[in-house]
Length: 284
Image 1 (cartoon, rainbow, N blue to C red):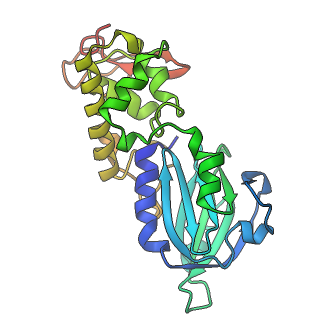
Image 2 (cartoon, rainbow, N blue to C red):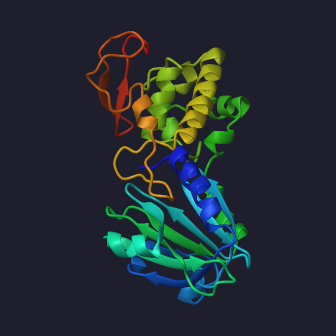
């Protein structure tokens, strides 16, 4: 599943392609992927027809397109979602399957579409949500999320961990605690901080929390710069893959040698997710 680095890189890749552009035509091929918040607009209006893109926002793993007239469409990629910009020729040549929603857009002065924005999701765990404005989206959806992991402060991390009785892995995966972390970057951050995933937050010393905070911020920043981790389906808005997977220290490497101490990495289900750690570097 795309996590914070993938969605943030997607946002950055889409900004120069979409900002100031107008959606001329919209087609929805699967109505069950759409959720409408607030005032129930006409379907085409809910899907941003005639809207001019003012901004692209992100909170955790969620992306939102905001129009100049206030309308908003939020996107969650789920397990396999992609949000791609294609030229008319590319769109025709690629004959994409699982293209659940398609927008044709161009410069407002053109009055004719020059490019396609395509939301595709083969496994259908993702979806799109329309809202009349950002305030409605924030109030009904994003306010339920914890602080964004990319702007997480050491003080907040310490405060939110102190009262948690679940494992570190389960706590960090909880989007209501911290928004944006998933299986990949939780495993990577815990390894960098030398913390076993089954430890409880209450067992951490102050320096453990400091190291964990530094690990989260550093790893996320590096992953964003590398375009994220393209494990399976993830592509950015230009259709390009991220390269951070080549720098994974533990995720997806169970049974291989630790790159720090050469101990064989172990794996088991923690918080119902496959979890990989080094028994030497992350001793419990």
